[in-house]
Image (cartoon, rainbow, N blue to C red; front, side):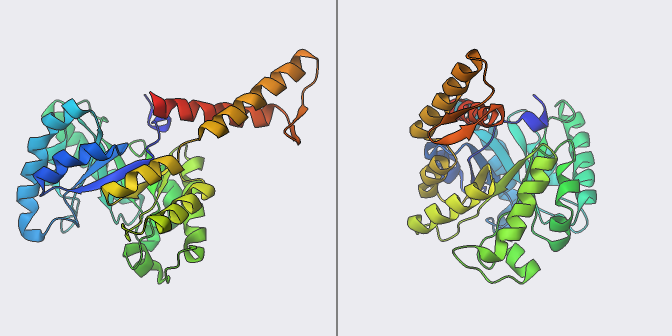
Amino acid sequence: MSVSAMKPMRSMMFVPGNKPDWIEKSVAAKADALILDLEDSVPPAQKVEAREIVKSKLDWLAGQKPRIWVRINRSAHLYDYEDILAIVNPVVEGIVISKPCGPEDIHTVSSMLAEAEYRAGVPVGHTRVIPLLETARSLQYAYEIAQHERVPAIVGATAKNADVARALKTVWSLEGRETLYLKSRIVMAARAAGKLPIGGVWQQVHDLEGLKVSSANDRQLGMSGELVLHPSNVEIVNKTYSPTEEEVAFYQGMIDALEKAQAEGRASCIYDGEHIDIAHVKTAREIIELAQSFNN
């Protein structure tokens, strides 16, 4: 499967790598993917221990069948090579990297991954890279970053008072006016490169009504999914990014209506009060295919 054809991930849930019991419990949340975190959610004194815990849990997780990603640390001049050596494994779909400065960081970490894959007997190129675009420069170069062959998705996450807000000096609001351009830029760059745009992250984890608003806003902008911090948030996010039964029925009706019109020698018709033609039906087929992919 090519990188550009990667199945969307509606929810990618962070799990602290230093909490083995949390890792085991996280599977029950039914997130589309888990991000075992070696970075910000792990205290500095526990980084080495967390790395070993995550490594030790990979075989067990393989039997549970979630999609597994690992967020690694940055070292003084590179990304942490000890993290990479520990987690390159056929079970791990890829790594998540924080705060790249630009495309050069993606090329560097790709070379590090290639060497680790070679040493581990994993096919070179297997381990994908999802960058969190949290610096102003990486946001400026979003398209160039998304073009890299290891990158299946880029993240434009805008947590309150976090890295992006600090980098751009924005002031957070629920309606997200201050991040509208940023997120649209991520969507445009990702789609232009044939990759997926990922949004989030909702850090007021117990405010589920606020999460519904925030997720709906990201989905409206074209995001394919988002980062999640708490198991209680997964169901809402999965629902937001999944076509409803009503939507599937509507779009199937659209397909049927145009097929009937075409059988009668017409290239368009009126469906539910709207003019439709082949362009609309292409959209309808994509939405139905997406819904089916989440049911498999």
